[in-house]
Length: 229
Image 1 (tube, rainbow, N blue to C red):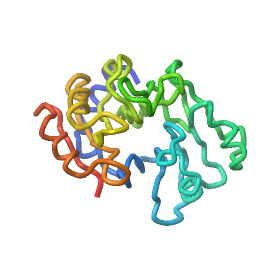
Image 2: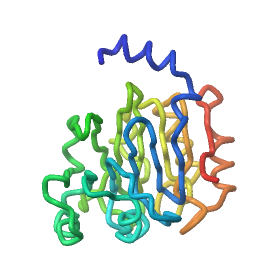
Image 3: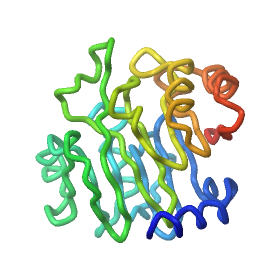
């Protein structure tokens, strides 16, 4: 889609449709139901859905790479996109090699899976040791029907994510292991998506107060929505 057509599509869609059929299930677990069923970092899934067309994994911490929860969403022909270092785990898990798409943080060229375009953005800590840059962990920009969704992964503000261009940004706000709400708002105010959604709170670390504080700090021209129930 060329830029003019994409801009026209975004204007037509508006925020309601951009965020429709998207759920923040728990913590950083997101489900898209927009033609394809896409899960990002499935965690604490409440029952066996086994409906995933694509699963995106940002890194292998237990609250992002949960084999128990992957089992609840994957089906026989589910594709899984994950950092290259997870390849052996996924093969042992029973995924066929043809259904595993390994990604690399330093290579963020556009890729395609099941007709869905995506690219990676490095996700790492600047002033903490929980997510070292050398681990090669990632966030994703996933394009669905002309709309670019940025899922930041576990990260601080970095030189790479300050350059992200997206329509909707899902950013961690819980602090301790990632950006806190103040830092997340600073990043969002820098990259200026049309919509911003706080994640990574309410389970392992952070509370709804962090999400509310984030919303208060984001520029008024950027619409925020708290999707976690």
